[in-house]
Length: 458
Image (cartoon, rainbow, N blue to C red; front, top):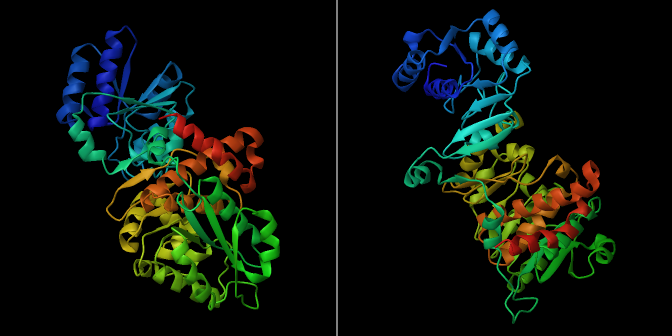
């Protein structure tokens, strides 16, 4: 390419030639079109005797057929849109060749800020990126094109890296382990975190069980499980450690609006709450959820059907008393914001940040590489988890984990960050043992091992 990414490729070509390798640079533009550092790199390469050919399909086919390795330096991190014309042909040719491909900074055709791939993109075996990871290398679908990613230190000053990447980062195990508070020697079940879980309905009893069990396994000392009174006998044997709160129910077996009077009496006994899993979208239940969100005096995590209550009016989530974190999957996020799932996928990071600012609370946008964004624009991209977590009830487990972390004193943002990381690792452990047949009930029992490993890594 004729820009800075192409210039980097030409520097690599010159150095590789100096080290004794045979090189051909296929130029995507005529030499006069190169400017600035790219023009200087082209001039130095040619002055050193480097071989140059203008790109065309036949020339590319011949050169790629005899190549031992291909360096992709057509588009850099500033690329947006769809590759067209000769660039589209070049990307197809590179992908069709047998040689391994090394991409410079980012595979050509991947949008650097979003990871979007709107048409063809180079499928790299290795990507050497400069200074720090780029969003397009960790966000899908672009991450799938990057292959093995190597971050090369090329001397960027630390303050420059902080200024450009300080509001977006990818947590590591030590980051999460440092967030988790140790239990003091003089602890009791109430001092280490008490959680209220409001969940379940006649047709979705499991959601309540998964959320409550996971809150315990994530370190909560005491969990109160509030469910419609009609399912109490079903859930009690499944979570024997919990305290149970039977709630008035509708004729459909869901939480009734008048349940607020019962639930509101519990707030002085708990430090955090979870609401949403398995509640359904019954009209009476929705009225209850709206009041809960508006008036809860304790921090809470809102998920699943609790989110669906705010379809088309996500901004009203800002009208509440207490800190919160919301955890939508892309379809739920679309309902909150009025976007289609395709629109959400085009810029998950940007949409999550915008929604967090609008809702006045952290947004955890689920998916391959879950994103957690806060109202100030800070965001993390979670590196853990796999497609094996695409199973019913996995989100209910995450809700319980986040609620436990809130009760243990983490901020809503840190609870979402740590919750996503821990949940993903539990999924990875389960998948290592049972593979793609992983189900949600495989996850809670693996949370203690994950938490122990994170503490031991400090």
